[in-house]
Amino acid sequence: MSSYSQSIPLPAPTSGDTGWFTKSRFGMFIHWGLYALPARHEWVKSRENISTEDYEKYFRHFDPDLYDPALWADLASEAGMKYFVVTTKHHEGFCLWDTKYSEYKAPNTPAGRDLLKPMVEAFRSKGLKVGFYHSLLDWHHPEYTVDNCHPMRINEAYIAADKGRDLKKYVEYLYNQTKELLTGFGKIDILWYDFSIKGNEKFPGKGKDEWQSEKLISIIRQLQPGIIINDRLQIDQDIKTPEQVQPVEWVKVDGKPVVWEACQTLSGSWGYHRDEESWKSVEMLVKMLIDTVSKGGNLLLNVGPTGRGELDYRAIRALKGIGGWMKYNNRSIYGCTQAPDSFKCPADCRFTFNPETNRLYLHVFSWPFKHIHLEGMSSTVDYAQLLNDASEIRLLRKENDLLTLEIPVKKPNVEVPVIELFLR
Ligand code: GLC
Image 1 (spheres, rainbow, N blue to C red):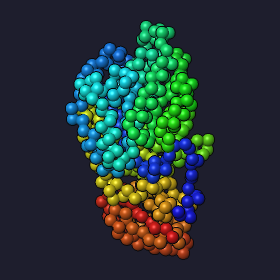
Image 2 (cartoon, rainbow, N blue to C red):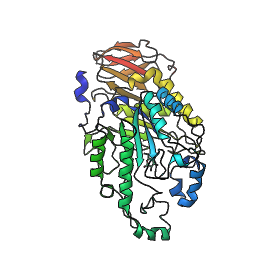
Image 3 (cartoon, rainbow, N blue to C red):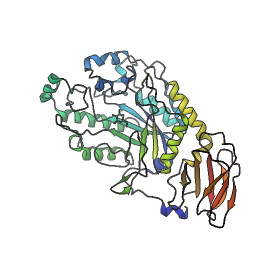
């Protein structure tokens, strides 16, 4: 272990096993459900206030005939992802697995089978860890009361009928399904609940009291010791999960660093969205991954497969692009974290650091002309090379403790070049 390790933030241990998680750094999020058919955002039922009767057509037509989870697992693995998190059920309430507690499930659609089990098997056989996203919201369950996210929040008759609804019965359903998911699919590494709702003038919120989060957490921990639980039950557990933002620094709670994972989309929607056009470039995605690790976090990058059961061509292009970069540069990602504060990062660059190998990685976001100067480091670095081809980067040591890296005029042929610095 490097002597620099003491100056790297160290989150306090939690009940879940985050050791593998912080080494892996990169995972695939999968949002797949009936909303793939309308193909205009996974919140379509809520956004367009669609009734359950009208939404039924998607259930009747859900027929992912090209679904082959082995292909998804290959794409994830080739992109360098080490775990995946899939929506077992999203807010619409549709279940991907053959649950015994609901008829609103994949086996009862034209798909005709459990879609979750083969996915878990395919990803696991590629060596990826398994995570389940599970929605706390449920816009299909008859006992689920109206709140400010619910599709029927503008329907006075539906709201009035809340008097006859018993949210406790829904919560019982939530418990039953959680137990089912945690006992029927082998070892589950992550449970990713989503989410607790703030109340407003019209509707009460739903949070730890409604979900009885404490009780739920203790059941989960009994069933799957070591499992990583996220923060959206309104009681923080093992990871914080900022969404669609790049935090400015290592994420903290009450001033203390915690284990964190940014979740990000490839374009603006989580579910398959045919017409959404804000797709991020491979270069931007690679930079987001680097930036995340440089602040001690993980990146969970989302794909929204189509109603035919395929990853969309734009997602495939992005994953292959990231994989191309990862093939040569993953050493600056796996096992890496924020660099010690004493290392001053030059402009337009990001550092990551591997405390076990004592190597520092300089990611050059904008390639400068001939030289990069590292202040205060002339006696710190023993040897330097470009990571993508192991070609030496010559070092000029100056008296004022300035270390100058002599870089080629031409930017190396990778989205983001990385210089590997072997520390003394
Ligand atoms: C949200 C959204 C959602 C998405 C999730 C991912 O809270 O409701 O659709 O699944 O965040 O973080």
